[in-house]
Length: 266
Image 1 (tube, rainbow, N blue to C red):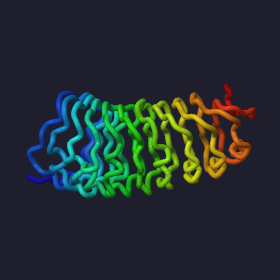
Image 2 (image 1 turned 30 degrees about the vertical axis):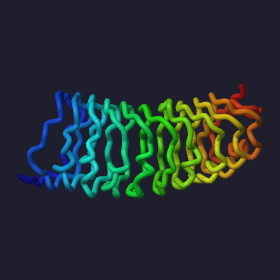
Image 3 (image 1 turned 90 degrees about the vertical axis):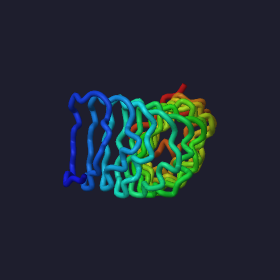
Image 4 (image 1 turned 135 degrees about the vertical axis):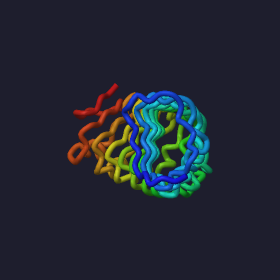
């Protein structure tokens, strides 16, 4: 069976139970939202196969407990997957994204996902991805070399076992907002972050970063927020970086040496 339905919004209700299996193909459906309900259990394995024209799928703020079925990424025109605030488990493999060339928004925040992030380095299909939210999960290991030229927002804070890989973000030249607070990052801050000149927000606080604040940060003239506090940094904040407060920088918190207004020194 087919359907002419294009937009189905069921969010912000009190639906309970499992997501039902789909027996038909809804050829025209472009947006499906079941967000902010009380849905539990797994996402049906073949769920994405029934919506070939789907552009947006919103399942956030439920209690879904399963891995993410690869069929979810099959619709050719898919631009947004919003699955945050559930109890989803499993890992993310590069093969999941092989048909996701139009994906712009991928929100998987506040789940129980784990493993490495290598899947994002094992595919070349995410060239359109602009916003990637992975915060409050259980991802571990090194941030892989990311070739995501359109990526503007990357949030992976509160993944306490992410230990290194800041240098692998240097090719994400469109980045505007980067939050990696409260991970397990134990390395020096790479000078290559200074090449991300579109950055407006950079949060690296609550890690185990060592060394000094790179003088290359003076190139981040669009920066509005810079948080480096609660690390193991040393030395003085370079004068050139301090001078950013004369442009857009309104929030700068660091616990390394330095004596200017706006820097909290230990």
